[in-house]
Structure formats: structure tokens, C-alpha cells
Amino acid sequence: MFPEFYQKVLRAYLSESQYLTLELLVLLLQSHRQVSLGRLATVFPQPIQYDSRIRNLQRFLILPQLSLKALWFPIVKYWLAQEFKGRHQNRAQRRYLKRLKHHKSDALVVAIDRTQWRDRNYSC
Image 1 (tube, rainbow, N blue to C red):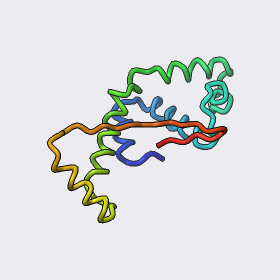
Image 2 (tube, one colour):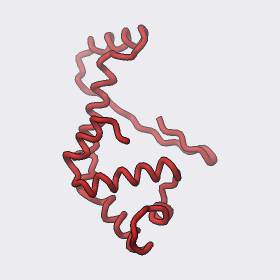
Image 3 (cartoon, rainbow, N blue to C red):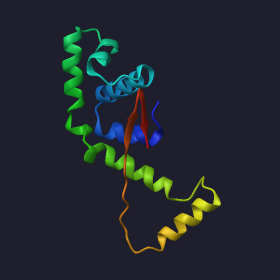
Image 4 (tube, rainbow, N blue to C red):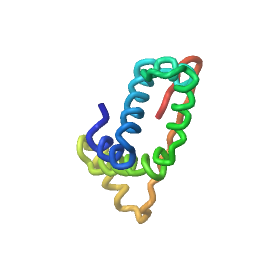
């Protein structure tokens, strides 16, 4: 389900049960598109009571292994490295990247925006 590199990083930082839980959560979010904990606990396929599923998901989501620095930074770093290699880009994009490489700055600023308009979520 996850791309190969994601699987390598996730399996390195998470136990097998944690990895499977994360995979299930992503599948549920893709199919139900609901982020509320109550809704996820309702549809989460675990043979325990509803309140126990909520507590289990809460404990899972606050794991230190899921922190930005420990887990997601290597994934974002890999993704950015692949994006700036120049493959699968048109001529204008390649020229723009070539001009960027001539700058002296080694810093890259990444901005993530989540905008909601009426009942639609837009992520850039």
C-alpha cells in the first residue's frame, strides 16, 4: 500500500503491530475521509469495545516514534531529494532548478498549507 521507501522507513521505526495499525488508519482515512477519533474508532477493525478502541488509537497517535523529527523528516527529505533531481520534469522546470542551484543558500523552505472552503479541504 505504501511506496517502497515509505515502507522501509516505517518498518525501521515502528514495530510490526504499529506498522499495521498505521496502515489500517491510512486505509480508513482514505475510504471514510473522516479525521474524528470517534468515527475512526467506530470503523476500526479491532475486536474490542468502542471505548477501548478510542484509548488504543489515542495511545498509538501519541507514540514518540510518530514524531515529525524521528519518522516523517526522513520521508520528506527523501521526497524532496527525488523531486529536485530533475527527473520527470519539463524543460522549464529543469531550467528553474538549474538557476536555483546557482544561489549560495543551502536552505530550502517548505510551506504546507491546509485551506478549507465551505465543505472542501484543499491541501497544497
